[in-house]
Amino acid sequence: MENAPTALHPIRRLYNWTLHWCGTPYAIPALCLVAFADASFFPIPPEAILIVLAFANPTKWWRYPLIALPFSLLGAIAGWNIGLHGWNLIGPWMFAHIPGFHKELFDKVATMYQNNAFLVLVCAPFTYIPAKVFTITSGICGVPLPTLLIADLIGRGARLFLVAALIRLFGDRVRDLLENHFKKFLLLMGCIVIPLAILVKVLRMHH
Image (cartoon, rainbow, N blue to C red; front, side, top):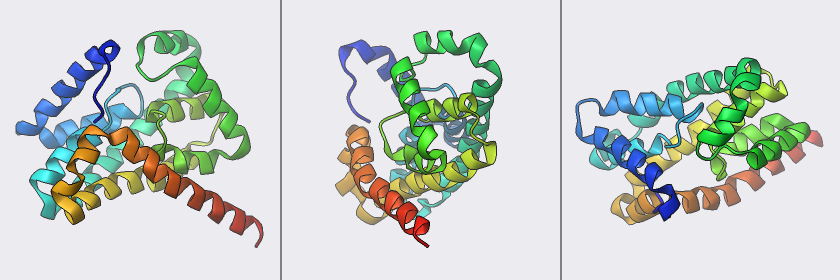
């Protein structure tokens, strides 16, 4: 993942702590836990572990997205419920203490939902905005839970499988991009995926 500036050293330490599980017998449980937590409160994405596991076992690249995705969906349910039932209680605390979750992003996502929540959620994994911002804001804005889960299954699933597939196809040639420039990778993929999703939406509207 991208090198953090000095102000984010605590996040870097948390990232290194997350990665250390890859060298233990608990790598798969750690992947599941991080996939769940990423969608509700944790600042490190599951790809941090998935990338290491896929490079270590490239012939089994498909296993890791398949394992992580159900837990990511469970995390989305947790984030949605935080927004729906607990926002008034913990919202100010999250703005102050959860990295990557601040009022400007919250307001931006809430505005996006007014236009097309499903399309936004499908494209969300290919933006720089953390997953938890989308899941929690979904609950706050009253986005139906099935809409969130179906969109997350498509978008999040595509991201997880794409990362693992790239490792299988290109090996060390994509290691630097995925390990040290992950945000740039997401933005690059977003430039491809988001226009395609919008095009599909427009074509469906004209049929």
